[in-house]
Length: 250
Image (cartoon, rainbow, N blue to C red):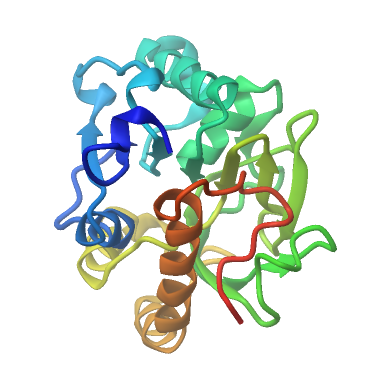
């Protein structure tokens, strides 16, 4: 833990890309456990902070596309921030758009599905041999994305999926997830309105199925998320979130 956390909980930078109706479950857990969160929204024109000021960071999902990064300078600033966290060896959790931004920053291709597919709903996340300690058998996760990523050079693929074959990777002190473990019921309701044009497309659950699957699978997903956050950000001298990291004590 760095000196920044000496007088309190770890100082965590959260880079947001969307106005959610309520705080997501990842932020809520970290805040409840005493982490000092600094939430910034570069997409709104807020400056991207200096990674040296933080003990860890999360780069969240959002509706923007990495393929538009050349016309959105703040995305390049976020990528520089992510590379800075890696250089410092401080934990970085990148979710969906965050994972895609990191992959692009590290030289991997990011783009739409070759068959034009999108994902919205719960899908199996199947661990690789290297990810077996991170994802339990039968792991189901909520997806909501229109782009995916190739594996960055030097990264370790931790999980595969149906619509998007690359679901999680680790590199250095970073863990990147294509799926969304942080979504709350209120955020899901907002998604159903904002992503209404997804319904009826292959790989997309209808609203009733989405609600039923959320009720069925989200409790286990949140248990997994809380354990992951504890391991990455809240335990003293947390290890890098690579293949050796287990999100739970089970």
